Every structure is written in C-alpha cells, then in structure tokens.
Image: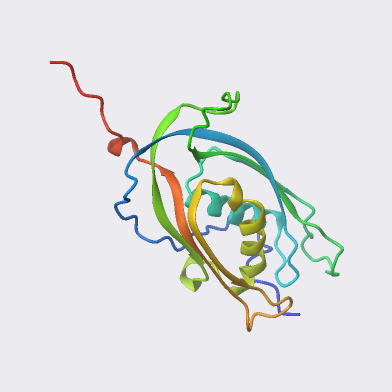
Length: 199
C-alpha cells in the first residue's frame, strides 16, 4: 500500500484548486438559468488514498465551487478514519452529505422547489479536471475523482462530457484521470446583461 498523503491528517484547511480551461465565448451565448438546490451524497469507495473527514470535505467543496456551485453550500463528512488508527480495507466507508445550489436550465414542466433561488444569467464554459501537483491534485486522488464523476457530476448541467479515468487500486503507477466538458456557470454580476432603459 502506498504511504498516506502528507498533510491529509492535519487539521489545517486544505485548499484545492482544479485546472480549469479558460472560458471562451460560447456559441450558445447567455442563457436564462435558475439556482437549483440539491441534496446529494458522495460515498468514497477508493482504497489507494485515505482522507480525514476535513480533507475529504474540503476537496469535494473545492470541486463543486470550481464547477460553478454557490459558495454557501453545507457539507458534512462522516465515516472517516481517525488520526493514528490502523487502516484495514473495507473497515471505513467515508461519505459526504452536501447541500448546494448550482446553475440549471429551468424546467418549465416542473414547478420550482422551495430550495430553488432566483433566476440568473449563465453560460456554458469549458472545464477540465486532471492531476496537477501545483494545484494539490495528484494521481492519488484518482479514485475520489472517479467517485465524484459517477455520483455528483451527472447531477450538474454539463455538456460535451468526456472522461478518461483509469484508477489502479493501491497503486499510483498506471492511474490517470482527465474529465473535460462544458459546465453551466452563472455570469458575474458585472457581466449580467442590463435591461434597456426606457427613453
């Protein structure tokens, strides 16, 4: 088994930044969207890397923020190994419960839920998630990224999704991950189109 990640067990907040391709002008342009509230759970099934609950929570939070979720999300992680415990495969089943809002295209066939927030202008923009040592993402996170791609990513407004994920349990050599596509992002307030002023 590979050694534990340095710093994963510390109580310090882990800041994770993911490689995101520069936003380019999209042929779809600006779209009317709404903030959609979701209550989801991610279960970490990986065996290669072990995370503290703080580390797992912070990485999932950073992933969601990089993919356009609002920062006022609520995340609770549970089932993680404690510092100093001996680790046995299958003993722990870490999971993250998250409540967050992200841009979504309005569904006129369904009424808005109480958790849905106000309308917002948005645009599909390119993104990429891959290993990057300078951004605190490495091959050891392969299984976490794979679980995120299977359990959370399908719930977001994504187009042209392409995945190349191959995780080798207990090994870093041979593992790889690259997720690319276009994600619906809310436009900054300064970029929101303004209504024409009456003359």
